Image (cartoon, rainbow, N blue to C red; front, side, top):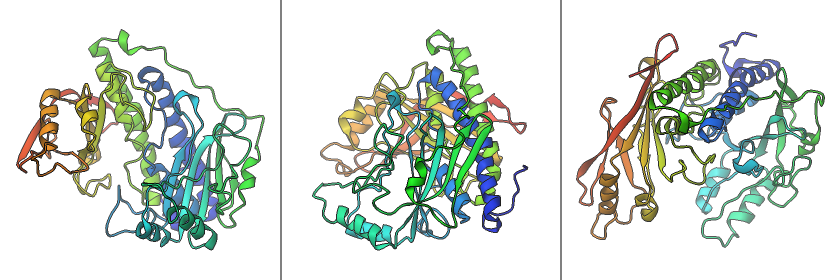
Length: 438
């Protein structure tokens, strides 16, 4: 089926079901195979939806509600979909050390923040995991935030918790279990979540074996196994070792990665973004870590959110897009470093990946900070006499000239300063969809 550009709110239920199957067959599943392959080289995470924006697109397809065409939060728009619906996601596949431990994190909320969240009428949950015979699957659920049972679950947790930063984290399955639902008080089953759809990877692509957006089903339906004779496709792992490659070979490999997992990936998902009115910045956040590993020759720790980005303890930060671009970026990006001073000054290296998209063509550069200058600036920023000594977040802003390899911040007196970086790699997308150095 050719991907139609009919807007999602004009499609029938059957058309949206077919669109969801197409999205997984053309976009998500091929990208997962590519990332599992490269993980064997870089030891970086192979999780496709690292930042939850793919989940927003999936939620739009299943519900028929358009997105907001934006990347990040906006003071002018409420919710992840245009009707105010919130979207949350979790990823239980390709976890470090083969763990299967996943939950939805609603975050730390005070009373007013909780009330604001509950002012939304609905929350869509996109839950990625393995089925009982080891196939990749995605389950989409809905949570009615106007339901008294749901409201009570949130109030009981956030208003009665004695924790300094309470985190409500409902689960769908027990850790490391695939054949039963979690039944605790904080389970999705207990708080009234209902099932809208399920996607299962099979040998020939994707199967939508549950589709109930018009009449949401009880969670027990998820324990059914469909088409048991069909197994997941085998993925060939790479035998390439970074330590065996020369710098020129690593540059060639980085260009190959940029072409296959960023350019090709984006070109495949763009029609779906147009149909659903969702941001073009999909699943790219963690891809930069692979590029840094390749060009630096230092493997990662196969970690999505926890642990060091590189095996030597170095940190990787990404600055994506520019204000008003095709990616839906609402502001000029920056590097957010937090305020754990001892941790920050202890990084052996700080890498920055800058990506933008002039003329609707991507370009990327990998930069490495002057580490001695960086540490000096960190200590100055948080020193006892600094006007920023109580700041929660040290930031460096991008240089608006892509060709300049520096980021700007402020010193302890509030004066602007520059942090110098050294360029390790520059690549860009050509009009023909190829990757070339720049």
